Amino acid sequence: MVDASSSDTIHGCEWRCPTPTATNPKGLNVEIADLVERTLRDADGTLSAAESAAATGISRVSARRYPERFHTTGTADVSLRYGAARRPERRYGWRD
Image 1 (cartoon, rainbow, N blue to C red):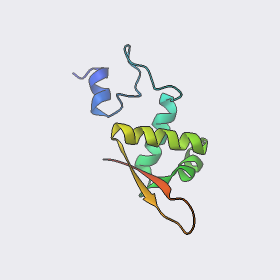
Image 2 (cartoon, helix red, strand yellow):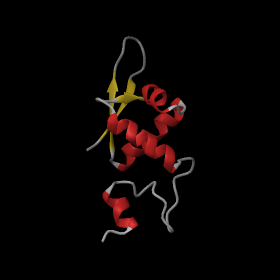
Image 3 (tube, one colour):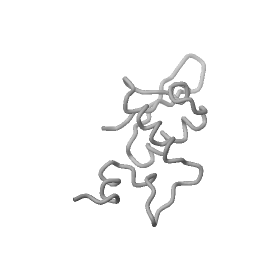
């Protein structure tokens, strides 16, 4: 039998799943993290923060914070796409 703590570790959500001894990083919400995770998992390829925001209905700033956190914990990849004369666009993809 797998307990909740083991299940969280198996599914890679130890940083955001509520446990009696751990808290979420300030400003990050479990439900929104799940929404962004599903969006990245379901995407064909990578998404920018703007594309993720449009797909989820959250702000672009939030749509960037969550994938950046996923990247920090090793569950998402970040790549850069260079455009004409603009800054590079950060693109996020779920790591399987």
